[in-house]
Amino acid sequence: MKKLLQGFLLSLIALTAQAQIDQPKEIATQQQFGVYTVHYNVFNSTDIPANVAEAYKLVRGKDRALVNISVTKTENGATSLGLPAQVSGVRRNLMQQKQTLKFIEVSEGDATYYLAPFVFNNEELLHFDIELNVEGAARPLKLTFNRTLYADK
Image (cartoon, rainbow, N blue to C red; front, side, top):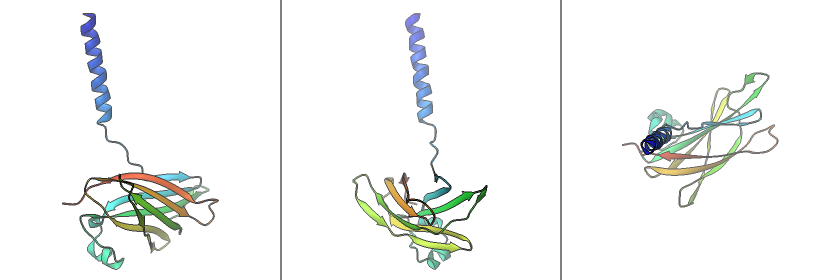
């Protein structure tokens, strides 16, 4: 009876652990640096309407994506829109092959954000290293994040 109970408890623990593994992980899309917050995401280029892609000279395709970066500042309870910054970065694949990201500044009214187009392979895990120089910040804001990308069908 004791062995049966131990077996049941081990099975229950294994099922609980598997259930936790199967839970979707929250994907981070921002990082705090004191009063500054860097917002970031990566998305397939086909998510951009054709007329917008044409206006910003972005190439759309099932194997093309964009990194989107913006930085805001919160002071006295008020948060700014996207601030101007100098943005640079690289993306690396699992083989540690690097590609320098070339960011395009997009200004819409009082908001500024940055887009960097790149080509990827389906189901490719990519590592992004981004650095922002923002006026008023004591030092560059550096962030690293990973994304697995899937080609549109």
